[in-house]
Image (cartoon, rainbow, N blue to C red; front, side, top):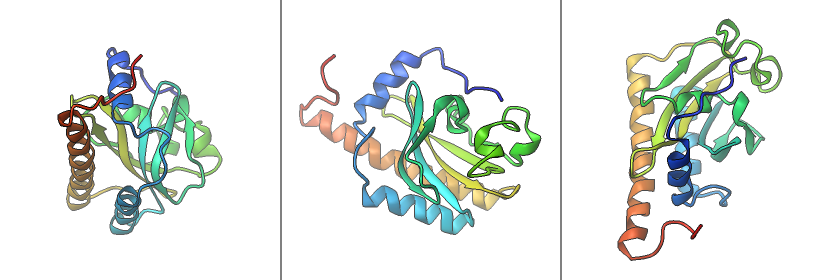
Length: 176
């Protein structure tokens, strides 16, 4: 298993994540709807909005999993935030980065993963909108466009809320 890489700008990325004020917050219907829609429309048993902090990935919204977080070092989303592109693993059992990952070998038995990185207003990749299957598969061009569009909806929602906080003159983060 390969742990997820750590970005060179990790400190700034974590500050941007904290500024969103989403970590460890109660469920929100708008995000729950988004993951339910993604799972249904893409035919996946699991979908999540995952935020990746320094030591874990935490699920702001999730369908198909009972967990609320997993360690970052075993997370697929930790790999996905390394690039702006949608990160796809078609068959985790055949991918050396994940074949012996406990999320593959044990529950939930991940085989397929696609994660579209979500960004803070300043452009840091802070998490993903991801869809997961327990069977190997591929996404076609239309499905990739849908995942990309749903991620863009999430980014627009969160970033407009964040910009609204700043425009009101309220701090977006707690003082250090």
